[in-house]
Amino acid sequence: MDQNILEIRHLSKSFGKQEVLKDIDFSVREGDVISIVGSSGSGKSTCLRCINLLETPTSGEIVFRGVNVAGRGTNANAYRAKVGMVFQSFNLFNNMTVLENCMAGQIKVLRRSKAEAREHALNFLGKVGMAPYINAKPRQISGGQKQRVAIARALAMDPEVLLFDEPTSALDPEMVGEVLAVMRSIAKEGMTMLVVTHEMAFARDVSNRVIFMADGVICEQGTPEQIFTAPQQERTREFLSRFNAG
Image (cartoon, rainbow, N blue to C red; front, side, top):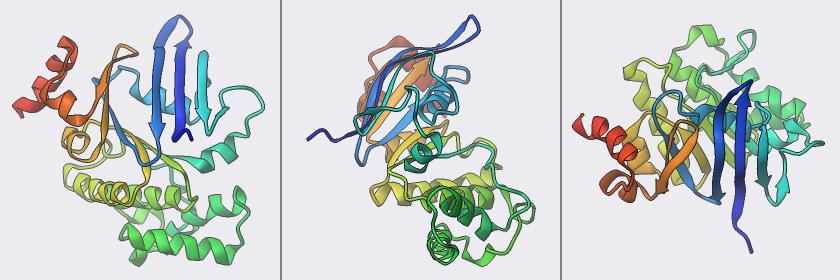
């Protein structure tokens, strides 16, 4: 039995004449925690947005459970319920409470009853340490708390894969740790995760695979040990030397 949940095959993406992704190939197995690292502008976030169908690939396939979802006729909302995404800028609804934010998608997309959605939301808000804030509006909580709510909202949809697009880059340094701690705990519980991040310690310590991208291509991929201690490519070495010097 094939354990690949996701397969990215020959994925390319252009905006006009600018080719942002070129022939991206990798697979995601159940329980993988894969960190995608690289300099800004290397195509990491665009890759994630294509996988979540927020961008339409120019060519290539995104195969989820054996079905190419990049083709026509895919129900994007139903797919996104299975392959959830946590954004850099939280994307919470400002007119809803923390609890309502975590219930809305469940009711609308999964057709859960309000009572069921509420119970599910409360469970995950408790897990991320946000139970005391269920009646707060997003403007009343910190950036780190907003991101924890966004993670709870994504988890409440019971996804099979969770995509994180630089989830800590919009946060003040003191809030980064609280969000990374939540991510570590859900990785430990076996959630399949694909994380675009600048947090090299997280990539090294929590991932089981690291993908290094530059100029829209995958330069190198392997275990954290291979990538961080014995990178094969000069560009990988150059990129990591800045981190290792820190």
